[in-house]
Amino acid sequence: MNRKKKHWYQYLWIWSILYFALGFFNILFAWLGMIDFILPLIFAIVGGNKWFCNNMCGRGQLFWVLGRDLKCSRRKPAPKWLSSKWFRYGFLAFFLTMFGNMVFQTYLVFSGAESLKKAIKLFWTFKVPWHWAYNGSIFPDWVAKFGFGFYSLMLTSTLIGLIVMVLYRERTWCTFCPMGTMTQGICQLKNKEK
Amino acid sequence: MAKRKASVITSGCVACGVCANVCPRGAISIYRGCYAMVNHNLCVGCGLCADACPAGTIEIHVIDENGGANHES
Image 1: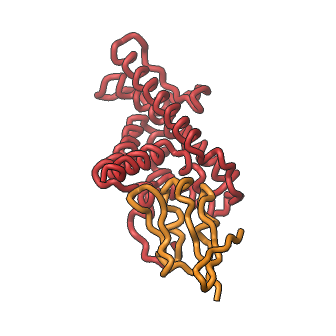
Image 2: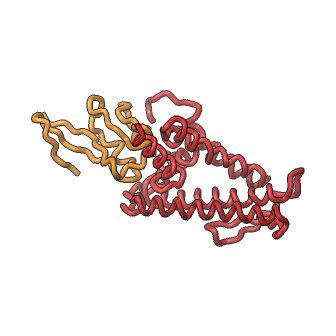
Image 3: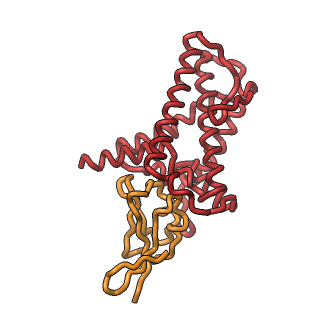
């Protein structure tokens, strides 16, 4: 990273910060996080590579900037089980379940069974008021509901990433990142076909 | 003369690409999104990759003239 030419996509850590800032003021911006969900999958399914993780992941870059450049990481090896297959796929399963639950909660608001609550949930447990980020829009309530849910998910996973960044190595999050596990799994499947 | 080279334990690699990013020689690439691969012709065994790897799956080996690899931690 030192003497090599800098590319525009090496500054995407700024996007990571910007995302949370935008969602603080208007929760509808949380939808933009879908880019970080869909792009890596397109790279993996179409290209059969992890170019997104390797070069474009704003979150990974943010952990690197904070952990390495700003020295906020202990840089100690993480316990082996964190990068073990069962933990990686277990965490992926848990994450997808929680994602599914979030979509279901959105459906409840869509169907009118539940009303929109302007709050985010951290670590799938702690409710945090977030009412300033939404005062109605041209969109129906379920659109905002998905925003609150998705923002919660993005913030929670970033916080987990920050904790393991401080405790272990800069990008320890990458070892069990659900997107990383999923894209590597797709690449391995594609590689077997050939 | 003995030379130091990085080698990847592919079974533990998560293909995140941190090693490739820190390598000052451009000696590491991510093979088809599956695992990191070291080009031993370019690797100088500096150990920056091993130090950065979040999965702790890169080791520096000493390779002697005869081509045999000795482990060095």
